[in-house]
Length: 437
Ligand SMILES: *Cc1c(COP(=O)(O)O)cnc(C)c1O
Image (cartoon, rainbow, N blue to C red; front, side, top):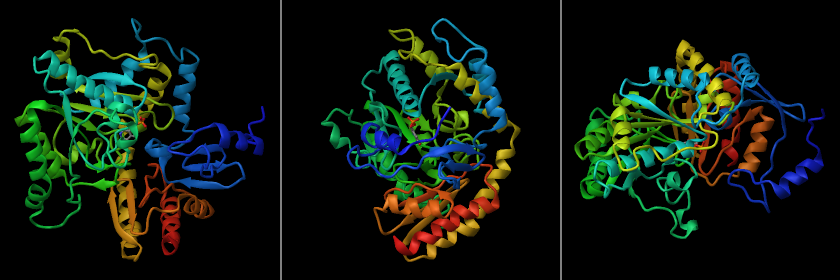
């Protein structure tokens, strides 16, 4: 079978196929990939480049991973999909057992879905059904923070940063929620009175909105500690701790989006551990299958799930065609097994150390506003933007790196198995473009 991409294929792609956030009439350049192995993308022209994006934050243990391949092939040979209504299978049970084991004790009821956006929609539906079932139907809005990103389905979009995600484009169709300004105090702020600072700058405006709106608030939806695609910010854990307290005080469910941060990325298995709290509902996705297949999970407390079942409908009104897809669950189950073995802790710690040693000094460059680091996440915020994506990407590829910058961020999200030399390729690639933004 000839799998090479021809110039005619590329022409077809340009004129018929939408890429993410792209133009169909004036698309950015795309790079044909023929294979991926470990941390390397093999371009069709023969170049091998280190993936610094982990395929949009999904890959943990490398491409073409022998264990994940085997789990997928084994499952393919038994059943790749069967409906979840009235049927159960082993991969789904095995996966959910592991998730419940990995999460804090109180998070124990799992809804599987097929993408991160839908996991957020499910979490929001759960909160709405919960308050409906417990006779407080006026609690039907969500509070969130600006600069967030939660996905592109309309429910998820309604809690994304309204400017970044251009709510205005959708003619008033997006549900109206309550937005607080994004927390300002950085995770690594070294002020000796940092908690006081968080109280004044971040907690006070949030608490005010909670007090003013709690009668109509079903949930707070936000990313744990790291705000991803909406602003690449890393906030102080004290803020999250106080959000938890305010949710308890005013009877609001805390829905944490750990689709990007969960499963080891920030140096903890779940980012909420930095704040020593537990949400009522957590959304996981992206890295769940280690970058193989699309799958997400929304996990709630028993109280939330049982509350829903006491309501008028008596059940959760959500179910999708590919819910609990056995193939995706089998791969995710093996990926969770690798995580439970625990090697990720040293891998992420080592990557973080190298980012502090080699990426952080780029903050001295006149074109750099700030460098932010947590776990295996390194963000260079530049002060000349928006960056020229296509031009920078061409330079990165020439330097042996796959990095996709956007707006004012050149960031890396390395695969956990990236070696010292490979990570250096990524960091040097970033350093090499800073003079020419
Ligand atoms: C990617 C992402 C989502 C959406 O997930 P999809 O699988 O793209 O729908 C939601 N929240 C966060 C924090 C994300 O990074």
